[in-house]
Amino acid sequence: MCHNAFVQTLTLRCTLKPTPEQAAALEATVRLFTEGCNHALRVAKEHKEFRRFKLQRLVYQDLRAMGLSANLAVQAIARVGRKKGSRAKYYRPTSCTFDQRTLSLRGESVSLTTTAGRLIVPMKLGNYQRGMLARAKSVQGGVLTKGPKGKWYINLILRLEVPTPPTGGGKVVGLDMGQKALATLSNGVQFSGGSIKGKRLHYLRKRAEVQSKLDRPSERTRGVKRLWERLTGREARFVNHTLHTLAKRIVDSLEPGDTLAVEDLTGLRGRTTKRGKKERHLHNLWPYARFRSLLEYKAALKGVRVVAVDPRHTSQECPRCGHTARENRRSQALFRCTACGFQHNADWVAAANIALRAGSEGMGRCKPARILRVSSMHRPPSESLCL
Image (tube, rainbow, N blue to C red; front, side, top):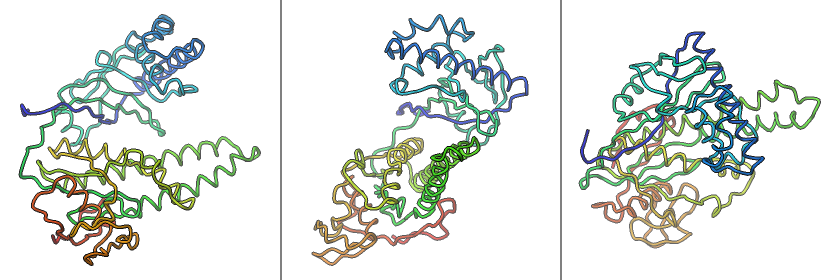
């Protein structure tokens, strides 16, 4: 490992391959853990006490008497004692948290403390998981989860040594985020947002249909309720997969030592409004913070630095002469400077200004790049960029 490094924590999801007996023990462990969480939640609400160590004095012995091991009892209390625990109504038997004492790795298997004792459950690993586990400095624990189709997963919490990005010599690439174009880079690559926008509007219409049935008691069947949950889960998985793919494509286009400049969009929804039900829906759902966190952790693994800059007027400032005016932004896609006449794609102009604000060297005031539209984020571009 590199001496000039820092430690990063991330989660790695692995599929488990338990035997029928092991699967039964995992199921029993998750259910008992959930019962412990719900008991701790009831006590916390009765005593209005959600501070972790105060709550532990109230319920620890009860959880041990229920059959939970000492470490699982502490993890159940920690789950309730978190800030969001005070807002929970109840917990469903879908997951169980393990720490370093109740979880360890045994080659390509994981050792877990369950109601049936210590079990060694094989994992189904791919090349990506093997590579991440080989780089891991330590395993801090994990979360056992059961998927909707009965499959078992373990979300391992890994600590990795990440090299500090080398200083000097790297290029600065600006990134503009939006909905019509999910991401536009100052080097000329643009990723269309049509697929994710269309999918989200599709799920909006489907949920409206299901909601109308839920509002009528005669049609509020168990199947309709399950359909509502499935729609929500499908949309969340689609968006998460899309963001992961997009972040990977962007980071793969950079080299160690490069800098990726992004907009600091903290508090964006409170500062901006959108007209129309569909536009407001998409604006409120667009996961800016989630996308930025994915970029940061993937970039760190490659030695790419991520910096955030002030996003104000990035789409209204001319990257050639510096003139800033609202009239420069002629439309969603067109930028034309009223001072010098410079014209280009408006999203690229924003990305170029973001790169300039992050300190791009040798770029001058303007170095236009041809926009290469990529309709699918899962297909690599078939031609090189013209810079």
